[in-house]
Length: 493
Image (cartoon, rainbow, N blue to C red):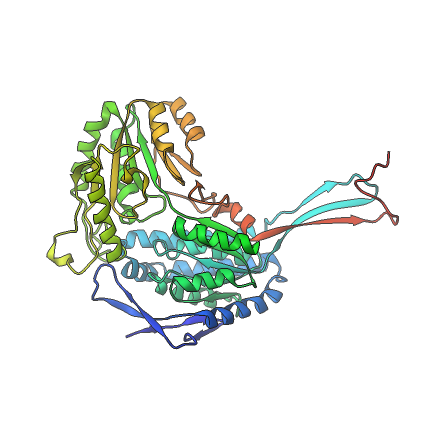
């Protein structure tokens, strides 16, 4: 069995304890991908010490030179794209056309981060004093702890890691225990690109080790993607430690379809939004809000398409939807369907494990639609992270927006309409960080801010230029060349 090690200070090393854990493919529970180092506090200490030491030199490297390395990272990701797509599919399940897109996001982010190293603009402003200049510019912060989920095991880490390093910080990265192999490949690529020893470190392991990274006094910033429950716990810790944290957490995203919409386009949108990545995206479409005039018609159209989706191993090029990540997730899908039906939902299709004997060893759940759900139902409010879509009826545009906003999360939202007034009002009134018009709730681009409000995030935005706000501090400089004492904020008049 293949064994995979931590990457600390430019070296591949076992966990100090020598312990390992196994990673199993969700498409086949008999397929053991390998044994991975099971890190603990001692490993965290080594990785953070390496990152802290490396920071002293890395922060002084001119930003455009750091950008040259980021460009090389993008080149290597491009070269290894198809290879890495297959590795990711095997360990987390989604079809290879999706995992290749996952890698493409890292490629785009690498090139974007590279270009931004020449645009880390500062500001000069007039002084109120004679012969004095006022400046403000960005500076790196130190060691960044990055903790991410398994569903986008390359793209999401890249949103944090690459801007952080491009800005002059160093990183200790903990990939999900359900997608550790992708973290290993990330380290291989960073090493080949010439990232100096200690600037990027990878610790493999389980959830408790992530908290140890968060609590470490030499880790100055945390970038987290995961559940709202865990994110809020980490935010509480960071609050007590006066430590910066960027949170990307849950979602319960809704697509609104109005009675004037292009229904075929809206149908394609909800199919991709709800069942792409097997519904396991923070931006997945898990609520469908239909205007009453097209409610029954659209449900019939949707059912006809959903029952034809090809379910199987993501390594099969014919597969359109893969497995959920593990048996616990499969059981959760079964649970939520039972709750939804008990509360009055109407099962349109799906609702159970896939019966195909060829898939019996995997974590496969049928794409599921439950109609007649309202804002008081559990399924309307609880994030499932699986291929379970609920459908609610709206009496009007205003009602649709009210239903949309009846949610503790606020990541992404979508509306399909030809009415330009409705479109603009929706973008104004939807309580989300990302809003789509005539496209699904998924589809973020690397050069734009990504993040949500309410229970989804804490105000930070990954992606685009805003990622550098997370990983830099502003330093204000007053340069006085008057050769005399000048007193600011004193009444000199």
